[in-house]
Length: 498
Image 1: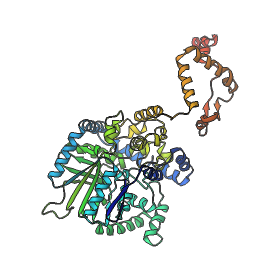
Image 2: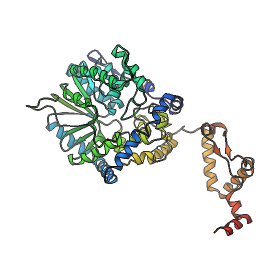
Image 3: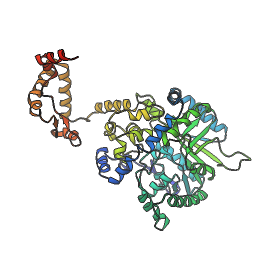
Image 4: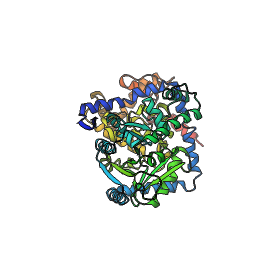
């Protein structure tokens, strides 16, 4: 990342400055989760997710004939595309250039932001409007544009609300899902200059009026990319509010930011993804607005930008492509796994600390921002598999979380000496049957018999207390299965079985 002053660039942020900046937007999961659990308003809002978005997701797929086969086909397209990703990306570049667009390759967030700021400066842009884009959140684009003195306005209603509030998105699809109607009314009342009632129609009406003015003033429109079609050079945007169309069509310059994994080979592949994306995201058969943008405005066309720029971002994705966690690049950013996850529905999106929340965020954030800095996230899951069942492309999220846990335990200094000794002793015990039998015999003759009347431990000692802080731990049985099996009583019970 870099700083910009006036019309010139100044020195890039050094490593300490970057660390300090990221620390403002990242935090420890456990402390944030405790805070979220204590927020009664947030708990009420999150408790409705499973009954609203989650239920609509399930109903939509149940009503889709051959939904499992369609999901398998979408998954297979992703798999085959990633196998020859460089071929499809070069084909995409050729198609975009052939239709009058411009392509910018960005190794990381710094180079992507630099390219975007340079485009804005060439256009002498003072106001930029943005359609919803998780990729631009990932590279902290708004922060960079503001540092460059360029007014940046989010035009998705949820993104507009959290931009005014100074929050990060809490959900991939519903960035302001953590806020109540009353809280949103308080946030929008400040720019309105009057007290707005907590009524959806009034709040949406104010936002529409304020944003329409910004669309008219904007010099540049910035969007994300849901899919990019290599065959035609088309950019596909999927929205429900129409702000994406205004962002791309009204300003004279359109900049689209996409991760390298968003490319698909052919136009014929697109329907498979459109059928599953809206159903997984909001439970709709199809989103209200689905745009295919192919190049800038041509002679004779009434609307569209004079310039179209496609920024293709790597930002660590190439590294993931060659790793055991390659499957994380299948993600189409629908948010279905968040709606299904019991952890997300208990603590919300901000607890995860990064741009991406929920089960997929617990995978992506460590991959993009570093495993050591996000060591809690791979463990922020019960591994129940609800996320995988909800995923429209059947990403095996639980398996990836387990792989991250394995990598985490291989990190030097991750475990304390005491924890390392405990794991070492447990491994040795499992390799020595006589030692294991001795340990279980001692456990049943001591704790097991002491807790015979109440088979639960209310508090474990030392660091093990983290488990019993929220739940009881089962005490050892008062008798080993081995001892029972060898006893005369067991033979009598087996003989009496019908």
